[in-house]
Image (cartoon, rainbow, N blue to C red; front, side, top):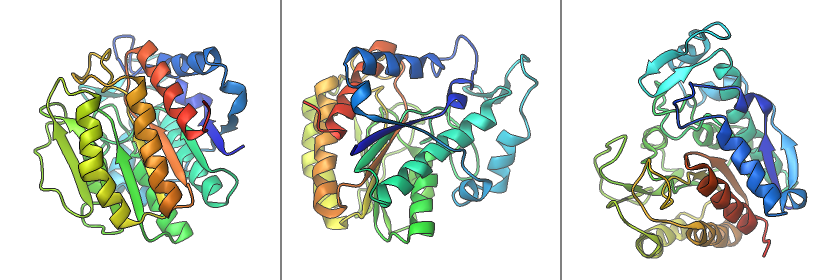
Length: 310
């Protein structure tokens, strides 16, 4: 099968409290919609191994690792707050290793030619996690860790990271700010958490702020004008996707107006670039998306596009 979905049961054990929008129910909502769409049996299911400490440390400091590993509360105790939005339960470190491990395992399988592409149905998300500290619901930066693995272990020299979450992937941008091997292309609602100030576009940093209320027509135009020329110029050998679905019009954590068809369109454009320059190689990792029905439907649209299912 050309497409696989990577999961690990520990990803559902990370629980920051009933009030928290980044909840275990997000993964169940995705699985329910995949079954409802009758495509679950058409996609290979793979269980992710945990990432090694060595792999995490390629992108994160010892301090960042220790903040997660060494502050786990007892099972059933109150969560430990790294910040007001980022909390640890007894199972958070295992979940974070499983999430990063899924991205690494998917990278290995795609580069080995076992798969054309893969989607990692994982949590906690990653794109806000800075090299030196977790933040914004994120513990380790799953996409950044996998990209570092692809370069260090497989010798890749040109990578693209595409991020379509409603929030700016500040941790990813910081991870590769001085690394010309990695192009990051994103849009993000501005102003909105993490309140990143827009930076000039460059050959490897194509992060485009958009206003609240922006819909598919705005996103499609900026992709055509900014992302695609930069991606083709970079000629990535592999593309990683930070697949956040909180720019959906039903998601109250953002204020954008995308719908499922926009996520399918975005995925097809990313696939076009991957086919031309990267042998079709794509690894996509779940980031945001907090309105459960919209999240599940949007992931179905994304995965159907990856798997070329009509």
